[in-house]
Each structure stands twice: as C-alpha cells, then as structure tokens.
Image (cartoon, rainbow, N blue to C red; front, side, top):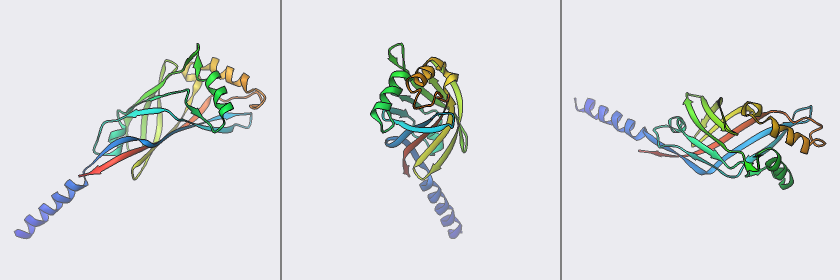
Length: 187
C-alpha cells in the first residue's frame, strides 16, 4: 500500500513539474521575407527590424501562439543594402505619403499549422502558415500574394523603380518567415 501511495505521488509530482508556461520574447526573434524579381524568379531576402508581438502566457508554445497579435513597422526594411531598402520603402511600403500598416492575429492554431489574419493596406486575409517548434523557438512560414491586399499600385511602382534590375518583372508572391523565441518556465 505504501508503495502504491508513493508511486502515485511520484507520478503526480512529475506531471506537475512538466507543466510549463510559455511567453513570447522579442529579443532573439526575427521577421524575414523573400520577394522575387526577374523572369527567373530570383529571391531577394530582407527582414523588418521593428515589429512587436503580443502573446499571453500559456501551458505550451503552441497555445501561446494562438491569439497572438503583431504589428510591423513597414519602414524598418533591412535587406543589407540601404539604397535598396529606401526604394522598397518609398515605392512599395508607402501609400499616399504614409507607411503601409501591417498587423495581424493568429486566429487558429493546430499542431503544425496556424491560420493568421494579416491586415495589410487596410485589407484582411486569412493565411495558412506552417509551424515548427524546436526547444524555445517557434518558426511560422507561409506565403502571401500582395495583390490580395490591394497593393497593385505599389507593386507597379516598385517594378518601375527597379525595372532594369528586375528585368521588368517583380512578382506578387512573397514568402514570410517568423522565428519567435519563447520564455519557457517549467514549474
């Protein structure tokens, strides 16, 4: 009988210690994207230096991701080439003299897929994204088509500004990747 009670307490103790609380951490997180140029569809990578994500503490990283919200400073483009960054910001991420607003919310979270409602240029679209969690880092990846966000005028302006370098072709699809770091505190 004593062994049974001891075993039950040990199982309960181990189970209680395995419960973890996850919360998003800005430092160490990265929001990057790849756009495409030329008829051969050559990728051009960049990231946003300024973005915020808000999540509530949860038992797992996946649970912390669900309901998270984010905002992106679209003028914080960093491709490693300041002249390119200025062209992208001035011709693509600016509309009517103001930076284009980018924000969103994770609407749904399943084991390895999230549905993210992106609001860009005042248009909201739900986008499926793959989710991979390794230790304290969650990676969300997916693609958008900027034409779905009423950005044909901005895409045309960028294509015109970069016509020679892009060989007359700037693609509408963009791959997105968020590496989000979480603080995991097990009790």
